[in-house]
Length: 161
Image 1 (cartoon, rainbow, N blue to C red):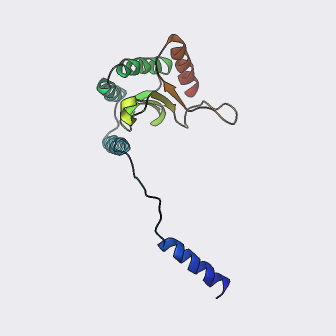
Image 2: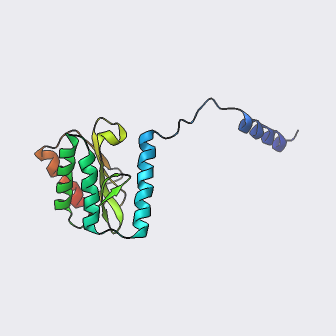
Image 3: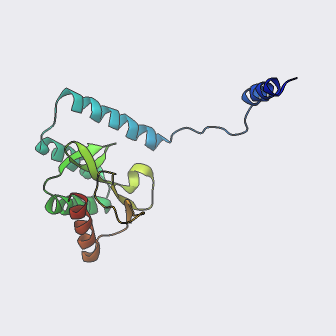
């Protein structure tokens, strides 16, 4: 048997050998987020939403959040709007997000949405947060004090420069 035939035989055996690894698939939360994203994309394709409509969608998502994260989400929304009025509120995977020229710059996720122990404030690759060869793009939020609010404001301002 030639080397090529031996290699092909081994490859064939590998592909037919059952794997002990089972794909568990997406969680219910991940599937729901993807469905919301598809719905958002279809709506965006039908008509471009105004900044006001996007804000209404974001506020509706915030209103669905349980306390105390609803209060924190309202405050995050205020901070982001005040720090970067150029950003347009919109939903992204069913969560509040803020876009520039149609591209997401920052977003936040509730604890309830993905069953996490903290809210997340994240920034996409369009955010201008580059700092050397490595920098953070998401932050865990347990509460908002004046120090966190100041840092978030600075990050959002830097993201849109």
